[in-house]
Length: 439
Image (tube, rainbow, N blue to C red):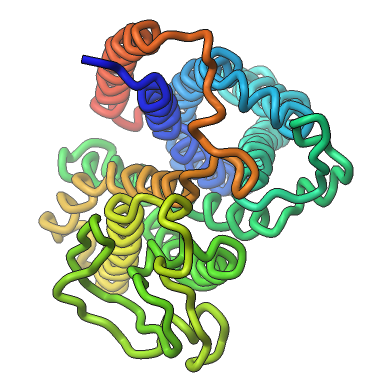
């Protein structure tokens, strides 16, 4: 059997990025929640909030370590498996990655040490400031990573010279047409992830009758916070991101919305069963003209369908369409779950609704899954380009690396990630089962 080195290289990168991307959304969301929790504990001298901060702070530290370990492997692959890509974009791509390391990573990691180990060694104000800088550092780190990825989606501030992209305008590269909307959309997704992570753990502690007073406080806080950020993900962040895609990546927009034929008054698809060859959506349930209106503010606007582009320039339809609609479906579920929780809170029935508390526990991984689906939509929807309309994925791999070598690395990485994932879950459960103690 012949092995396709391009497919295996893509699979390897998907594996490493997918596993790594479990941890940053949790870290970012949890860090910002801890900024508020530690502020209340400090300013109001509320020992309960201080204990909540200590409990979730240790979980943040554990999650951060796994994120760093898996992220290092991911960056090495640019040179190992994607040499032609690195040669093509090195002049552009190096700048945001360097900025991420210098301006964000050391800020985040340095102050995380102060936050976790300096509680009794620095003043309360300095301690709170340390978690604030951890949250800021994590957010800045995400910004620079998204700058690099967004440039691949909507390149700007460059010229093509000697067969490679060379940077001509740093700020045009940074604020390319998709950076800001993708950053806001992704950070809000991380806040949702952190909210559900905290709410689910708090609900488990309430069900288990462990440290109920502290768990109820963190549960209420995370639910209200989760409701707000879940609604923001629908509007304005999700809406503005969709409009950006419609204008700058029309092939991707056609695929995610199931618009197979160019049409005016394009409908918004609520439900359908996608079929790949040829691209088609069966059993459609749709709202007339709404896709045209949401994309361009005009119900009569023409939306290019997949038939408007050469067959070799359109993304894989089934995966792009399915991942997007599953992500949107989960987003609507998050709104429903959190608003239901706020309703129960207002009726003073939150802690007595054991069915709802169990739902929160089982919902912990759902925002992580939604983040993965969003990443799949963005990356698969850009295909066949690794840099949109500049460099095809099939032309970007390392020719010196054999398919057998890539396959071997996939097997090794899979084993390591299974072990790391198991260790993370084991340590996480041990910490959770210890409860929010007085220590």
